[in-house]
Length: 232
Image 1 (cartoon, rainbow, N blue to C red):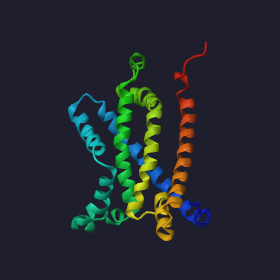
Image 2: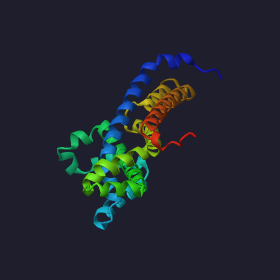
Image 3: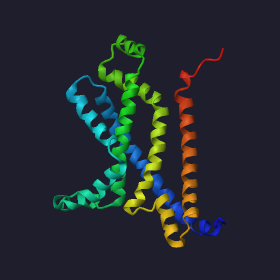
Image 4: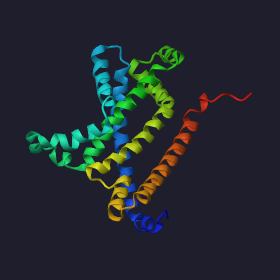
């Protein structure tokens, strides 16, 4: 079998366009997912059941159901209701890009909330005692001490979530978006060369993963350097 480089080269602009769509989906989903995960993570560490339970139920349901099912429910499921089609949100819900970003943001918010909650729960007691000794209110303690410290310690786990979300964006091709995987499906449909089409897509994802891992390693060295073992 001979790898047909000409097909890959001729369709490179299609893959580059798919790359831009993938990056757009990833950036929007992560931004809004993290924004939603912060209050959810704080709710998860609350000792008040009426605060903790709604966040627990949300993360349990989202993490317990497949991402593909969530995407289909938002993109295809909501459209069956006449009230939704007549509402002011229908122009958004009829957009594949909006539905994909919404589904991905909801999914990553649940996982990120649990990462933040776990990091908050593992906060060293000394940091809490030091904040209390300074006379900080609970809100100020979370804002200045606990949350920044927890977010720094959560970087290694969050980097895995970002990589997983990058792979998850490949589902966008199922709802008509031409991302990297969508570009591969298009090339395969035109030329019946699945090996060339999907190997190229895999190479794009691999390069993106390498870049993201390197960026997170740099961030970890910058913000988690104080946790590194001291040299004798």
